[in-house]
Image (cartoon, rainbow, N blue to C red; front, side):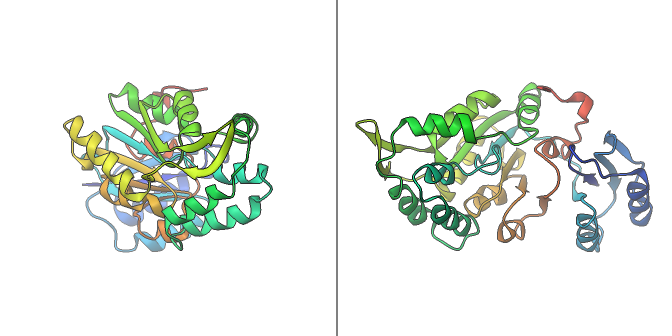
Length: 293
């Protein structure tokens, strides 16, 4: 059996009963179950429809995401999440670079690296090099004044932990930010790269080895083994090319507002919903969310 989930942005609900019922009837699905009025609904299917991507494309134009997945095992026991442009709205290195006066240049490199056009590690070293001389205090200023959480993150982490799942924040960014974000959202652990600092200023270097695509895969594999589960029992979420390894390994790899080259490799693409989409995909209704504001 399979499940079709339709969802939209909770801040701008765009899902109506007519749309859900029309698709359910066309695909011969089971009774619709609303997970959140106007925001998310699901219904059972006996097989994956051959035209699902055509329907997906049509719904995209109407602000609705569509995911078809196996019903069995969709409730996950491990959440492994990227940070930049996933759990937070920004790319931390771009914000630091803006303080250094090279924001546009670094942002362009970041965009190409996240789309898989550049080697991640080389691009990171180049961008960090441009931060040389910035006072260490800028990190706190950027986090306080520029960084905002992606909607739904607190509910996602709290709800999965309440259901016994382990949660890990794994980023190609920097520990100076992951530690703060992880603490604020309640992640069980966090891993990232370390910016080198001397005499109160950034040296323009990052500690080796760099945490990139393979390190994210290794972290997922390690945590799954430690907890006695398989990677298939994990849900991974990210938006960049360096996330593709863990997205492909996890039982549910979610491309969240992802770069086009990344989304093309993923069956679960969330372009309109927020992080609560990952709970809806597990069949969890909004009334059962934990950590609500």
